[in-house]
Image 1 (cartoon, rainbow, N blue to C red):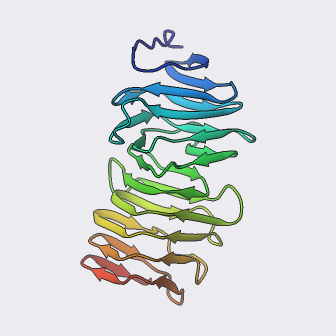
Image 2: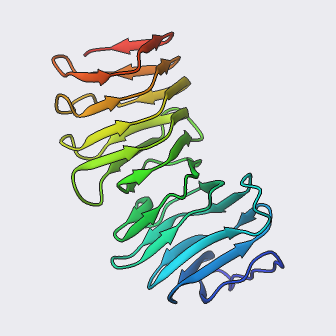
Length: 232
């Protein structure tokens, strides 16, 4: 295994346990109503909400901070409240970049996925969401925690990488705008059930958008097609 992890910073204070396995650090939060307080940008290893409630607090309150971690795991019966700034996830744990079996409170913040691997994301509701994977071929497959629905209340931005679904029967609703850049792909395997993909805002496609032949996708805010649109 690797040497024990060491964390040295004056920008944050936690109440939990900090462990290291084979060179990969994990911050495990175990207390009730605990905070991770930090100033400016902060980077840790994997974050595991093991018990109670944990809230990210950027102490300057400017809302432009970035909290970066390798993955987020939220156990059943626990709550994690994200920053109102940006939460960037740079890896995965046990095949999941974000696995929510409890409660994820988005706090009107942005979640960014930025790494080089195929991975899974389990969560019901995001505010703003961005895929900025290391290559267009890296795919994130999204599924719900409960209720057969994944909701993005703000905007979906696919800067690079592939947004896909783990379960074809889940409803995916993007309430804000959807922007697919040149290296972005929406649905690698377009086998989704009909009427289960709903865009309320404008969809701008400079990359690739795939719809299964015979499937109805609702684009209530319009479609600006500048890339590749396929119905295999």
